[in-house]
Image (cartoon, rainbow over all chains, first blue to last red):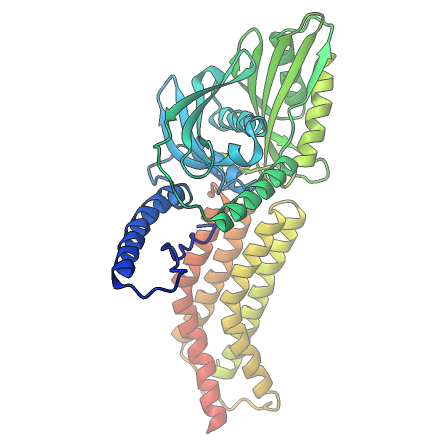
Length: 322
Length: 145
């Protein structure tokens, strides 16, 4: 566990008037005992998030890759895996964010959820319509919060977050350990700050050209095939293109001769006057005198985030001129 | 062949093997066969495997620095053969593992390579340790008597 458990102090009211009454002492003792039982019960509820262990069920390669990335960017304590459900047409991942929204605010949390779904899509090599991410969060203070289910989906290139209440407040009163809350808050803020610095952005470009996903597919296939890489188109529609590039060398991390595996996702969003191109890029790298296997790659984030960011920006500019 | 001659040969072989494996790893790293952290982990795993033997060998060489006359007994052909074969196979095996990983043959990830490297120590350690131990322990006993 990341934090020390709350230390529950003496709960009985001190006898301030100095009377030595045995009946009063008995009453206070009973009251303190009842309060202690109640407090320990609710303390257990409060700490449930911090103590909850991730399920030890067989995990899909997508989840293994996601968890490795989550740990590498420092979100281990912030997002715990609750469950994973996978069918031939749908992939659903449920995460527990605890009091994240309480600490960093709804909007900042939503930004992180957006990055998470992009990663899940990328690691699963799935079409965005197949992926559903549920982030469970607590809202309404640290004492008796309500449980919210943030259903994150990507449709037509837009990431939508649908919030639903899944657990009402229980109407209980509890004692809070403010030292614990202060530590949790500071730790979460630090982690989120580091996460923002260590992950790449999603670059966009506006163009007045009539660009289609088919043209972008041709351009990217040519670009990477010329460099000796293999390109696999994983999903394509009128405004969405997803492809995986393997056996690429020194493309993103130019100063090292690493093997690279890129997951390129392009979203076309028509605006009133122009066409906006969003690029979602995920990169992995591996060593070897010959290309490594799928498991032999490591995520470029956080070690090479700046390279990935720079490459993404230059690639989206190139896509705008296709 | 006398025991002293064999001891010197095997001692040199193991020291050279240690250098060979470490040097191969560094050279392959320079050729991008390994990432930096993979290279350091490999060396950190390989060096202790040999250091158990090389420490005993170097100690023996230092202790016998004034002994120029070979008064040790003659050893059997089987002992000579076994003394050469086991450390040689161990070295070839380690060098082969390092090269296979560098060429990404047979290993899906670095974790698999690391696992096999550790298992090799258990596999060969006992046999090589027995041979090297017998040689250098005998030497020590003679020095004491």
